[in-house]
Length: 234
Length: 234
Image (cartoon, rainbow over all chains, first blue to last red):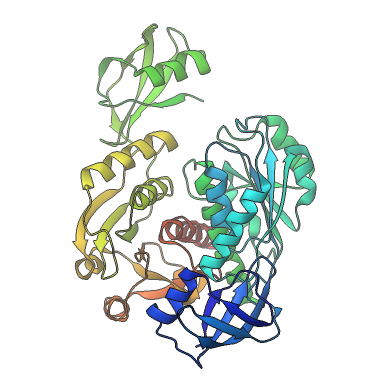
């Protein structure tokens, strides 16, 4: 299998690999001049084959890049309410690995943190994509008020809630999915009502309350389990 | 609904609440003398009703404790390979919230960190259970060599692997489940072979590689999605 490595600023022609990628290609995988590798750049969703033309430092001559095929096939939107510290970074990283196509960062009534640097979150997503081999990054929207977030969802909308129905009941057969995750203190009654008015239903994963930074991974695990299930059954 | 709060060392008779719980009961939820609350202690898996008999500080007279019913109904074992920094703490916390009944900490060939303080992980589990309202804690075993870990699983064994089958294919209809998650560099070929010999099959969540600290939450999300599905269908 062709070795696949992240290359920032991927374009046709000769490029010097970053020192990390250089080490990975020439030392960990012992590739040498004449070997072919695949470069990918999640920031632009491009990928290209290239031939190693020099080492120390490693230089690669890339062919014309094409749009990546290593991207999610179905739409998954995550509405994530702002939370303290680096929790949102962790959620963006996890959601990128878990194939989310759009992240909407929202401020809820109980959000303690009410702003955020979206450029920074985008960098976190790019770095996560590079590490997990994903060819693109999720679209990042926000930071918006939660009332404006519902409209950015697609397909079946599920609001994560400990008192909701099992995910199998609310996600079965849905191709496009939007998952909404509240801040540390959860959604208020008004927010629950607004979500319901926007067509969202309440779903839960497991039996116990989850912290906001665990909910995305667990809910996305459920999403893929049920989607794969439908794909196989269909 | 009766307010449910963690009480370390729960027993019959009068106890003073911790300052955090005191604040939660008397200030956040405005309970006063004469009100009834429910105390639970994940460390002993006990719970009991009690009447608030004083405030500042809050004291509660508890009835005879009973074994908790707020515990997972089906067996889920997590074999987690040791990983760097505080990753294992995070996994223990997530797994407790997500209803794992047994955690086996194991050293794999590619584990950089090879030892761990099991008492510390147990404290992490107790704290996570308190926060999420879970009435018990997972059993914690280890740190053992990975070769000894396979035997601690129960039911259907799934080794998380990016090249595995969709979780829906490997978990369908399984009541007891064991999930095995590798260290940062993944399992070696020999470890894959040993897992297969022990009856484990390879399963994946989503399409991309996951970090070891995300895999447990995502896999457990899948586990509950598929189990709830079976429960509803059955």
